[in-house]
Length: 336
Image (cartoon, rainbow, N blue to C red; front, side):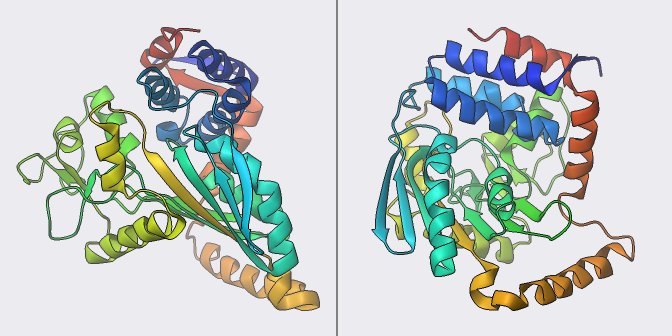
């Protein structure tokens, strides 16, 4: 496939310009662009610069408040809340992150609720940032009701990702971020753009029949991974990042969208744990035990989550990235 070679700085400048051109306030544009560049840098095409099309569409459709002010509050000693005001989640997270880190270190554990924020990106950048601070991190968010529960065919859940970060003494953290659906919705959208079929277990059409047509799944329902197990995890995410923090479920989010086709609006829950709270001076000893487990995995040729992402990152930092020609054309056509 032909493409356009770009440095990461060029990509960052382009993303910021297009977001500003769409009317997004500078602080939001900076935070959102950084997330997109991180996705492209790490080889996550479904969460890279492609998401610029998604973000600008949400702005143009009035789903996002482009100049929203994120408001920080402290509902309890170990809790932080950021009211996002209908803006993108990235700036809300950056607003709450310092207080979350401070409270996790002071109390051993802390949680950050992001309310009334628009989601379109992966969660791994957030848990990785916290793991880089020496904290164990978990993040959860619902989305729009695109996913049917196991045994059903009507959408109830969002793609409902779960992300986890574990700090390591030498090298980047152990991180995973996966949707509780079979795949991220962006993967299906990329297959549709490319005119490619998908596996028949990714979703069903509007009549509840398995299909390999990505467009039919997008108008029907996606499936959870792992049958009833993925369905239970999806329900857990709905509860943790919806009613628990006073925000919407995926069904409520898509109802509020009212057919505009914008990104999900709702909540996110991030939990940060300071290992020193449990371990104190024994932290290095128990970190070594964790490293022994990682060695047991990689020693037999198995791959740790994010290892491909870190390899792609190293290559992108050295060589830049290549954006598919059709995607680059669509991005350049955006106002800004």
